[in-house]
Structure formats: C-alpha cells, structure tokens
Length: 143
Picture (cartoon, rainbow, N blue to C red):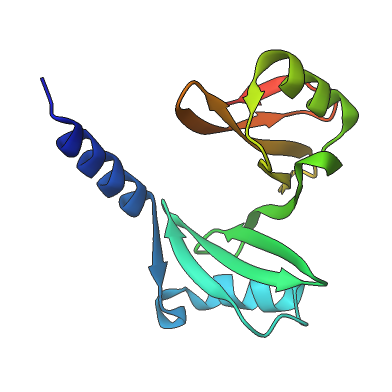
C-alpha cells in the first residue's frame, strides 16, 4: 500500500508534468504571433507548456484569461475566469443539485476553437476538489 506522502508526491509530479511555466523564448514564433494578433493590447503574458500545446496566461479589461495555442499557432480555446455567481442559471442549478460547490468556487467560461462555449466550475466531492465542465443548459460535459 502506498503511503500518503508517495501518493501526494506522484500527484504533484503529475501536475507539474501537465503544465510547466516556460520562458517566452521556448514558445514557437507561430504561437506567439497568433497570441499577439488576437490580443494586441496585452503586454504581460506568462507561458506554460500544456501537453503538446502552449498556454498564455494574461489579464485583459480587468479579467483573468488564458489561451491554449498549438505550436503551429492555432488557438484551441480561450478561458475567462468569472465569479461562480455569473455562471448560467442552469449550470448553477446543476451544481446546487449534484455537487457540493466550494464556497467562493472558481469558475470560468471556455470558448473552444469551433466557437462552442462550456463552463468550468471547481467543486468539492467529499475532500476532493475537481473541475467540472457544463454546457450553458447545465448538462455535464466532463469532469
């Protein structure tokens, strides 16, 4: 049986392997050019490697946002953080019915490359926190 410390260590390594902060010089020129063209007003960007893609974290018009961009410069998704109270009513109803939502839960809207929007909410199930995705009508997409 694994000790709690080894399980925690494995989880930490997995999270580090999933998204690692990187220097802008490690981001392909195509990804940087796409970001600059889409968000010309943004001057401060933090980059992370997310799987095979690159995630740009930034603030725009007072909102915390991120964009996931392929090495060839294709935007996969744009995420905008929001208070959980601003989630669509159907999403809030599903959360209230099916999940023990965290107090002050983190939430976001995520617009995919095909134009569809899903909504992300950080929820707690027992002592475990996880992110779940919903359509605007409150249907669970993924967790």
